[in-house]
Length: 158
Image 1 (cartoon, rainbow, N blue to C red):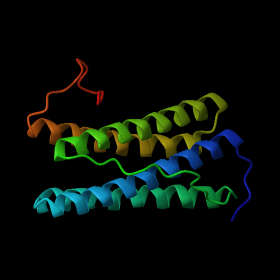
Image 2 (cartoon, rainbow, N blue to C red; image 1 turned 30 degrees about the horizontal axis):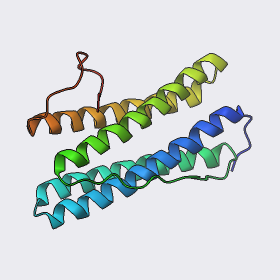
Image 3 (tube, helix red, strand yellow; image 1 turned 180 degrees about the vertical axis):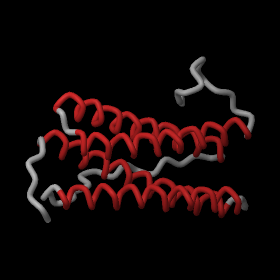
Image 4 (cartoon, helix red, strand yellow; image 1 turned 45 degrees about the vertical axis):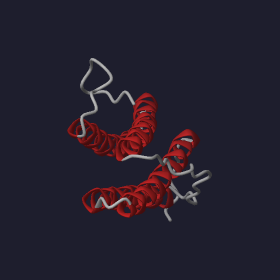
C-alpha cells in the first residue's frame, strides 16, 4: 500500500460506496435466485450479469482504498430488495442505483471542490457506469409496460 495524503472525506465516500456496491451485489444475487425460482431464466441471467458488474465496482473501490493506504471496510450492507414480481424487484434496483449514483456525484463534486482530480476521475467513471445501469433498468421496466415517472428522461424516479 502506498501512503498518499487524501482528504478523510474522500475515504468516507469510498467506504459508503463500497457498502452500497456490496449491497447491490447481495441484492442482484438474491433477485437472480428468486426470479429463477419463478421460472424466469432470462431475467435471472441478466440479474447475475449485474451482480458481476457490481462486484467489479466493489473490487475497484477496494483497490483504490488500498492504494490510498486505507483498509477497506464496508460498514453496513442493506437488506436485499425483494418483491412479488419482476417489476417490484426492478423498482428496488432503481432505488438502489439512484443512491449509488448520488454518492458518486457527491464524491465527484467534492473532489472538484478540493482539487483532487485523480479521485474525482475515479468517482466520475463509476458515476457514468452506474448511470448506464440505471438507464438499463429504466428501459427494462419500460419493456414491461411501466411508464417513466418523471418528465426528465435522464433521471430515475422510482
